[in-house]
Length: 274
Length: 255
Ligand SMILES: Nc1ncnc2c1ncn2[C@@H]1O[C@H](COP(=O)(O)OP(=O)(O)OP(=O)(O)O)[C@@H](O)[C@H]1O
Ligand SMILES: [Mg+2]
Image (cartoon, rainbow over the protein chains, first blue to last red):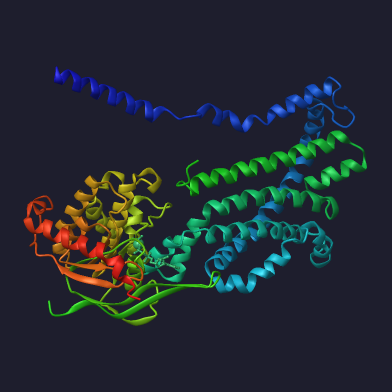
């Protein structure tokens, strides 16, 4: 009898192991989730065709597809996308790296924070787009002015979230580093940085969103390329369909960039329970 | 045992809270010494300054008056254990080796026996949030052993554990300590734990912490923590320690 019971429980044990191994809770929602924004397009389509939305300003998405295809055929859309993406990409790096380094430095070193914290605090409230004309004067109409304005916007998101993350680190972690004989540099890389990572990623997600807002606005004014320019020039010719191609494209880019950061976060922050 | 590994003379430590304008004296005129290779327990009520004393011994806090001498490097098991959530168990244990520049292979080699010892081998790749409280505590003990200082400072390392796990780990500690050559200062507020482990028990008063008594524990080594409890002296010393702890409040402030 006892052996029977044992065999039975061994079988159950094995079964449970199998179930836990293959079971991923919420797997289907996770796969479908990224596509649910398409639902918005469907609602828009129906609303526009049924007259709930004014089709002059909100033409149904399917009617925009034609314009979209034309722009792709001519290669215009791709070149605008490329222009915008490269500006956002360069700007992100130019802003995020100093944001990260300074965020950790000011978070971990009290006298640096006391000394220079007010400098950043006083610069923070300046609306970034308000300094675009100045940047255009300094850097001209070329790429540099776009990089710099995106970088400035990104910097503040990353800087403040990094510093906040370091400041919220439990002091005991720094004690462990010290009693283990870690140098200051080692303490930054092995404690301050990883402790702040979850918060750094929050900053990065906000920064990516912000970067697309800033780039669109700055392409309205000082550029002949980029999705922002596409939207702006469509206004000039009252081409609503083209405008929407631009709007949908840049939203999509922002959305995908956000997904990319979230993916990176899962890779780099495996300890945060999600 | 002529040479001492730790020497405290007339040590004072206070904290001032500028916001409330309040000063707390945490440690008052504490003097004691610990011989090389000795196992000393600091026993005292909550808030009496045990952790403060340990942080001073570890070189993490400055003292205000008196003198401190600690020979060699001190490894610490913190009361809040401080296991890094961003490192696996194995990397947590190897952390002191890593920050001192040990290579990957050397870290693996030196950490493996410690994981075995603390029963964490099967979980070496797990992150702390996947562990039980006791396993996290063991990770922190293993890390201090990897740190391998001549002095081992342990702040209620088994405090958060259930009675059974605590006994097992006490037994383990007693098993590995004699060969390690380490001088141990072990903080606890459990009378049982103090006399199970120590060569000497230093009894502290309630805040401000002073040393009330220095009680030698007569049990030999190796010790069996179960057999120990049948020894008639066990009851006597237990009584003596409790008496010291109980009578204390009335005498703290003579004025
Ligand atoms: N960083 C600090 N700032 C201000 N006061 C402190 C600080 N650290 C400790 N204290 C005070 O010093 C006293 C002793 O604290 P300590 O942590 O050393 O007690 P303990 O004996 O370890 O207590 P427990 O057994 O509860 O851990 C307490 O009154 C505490 O409020
Ligand atoms: Mg304490």
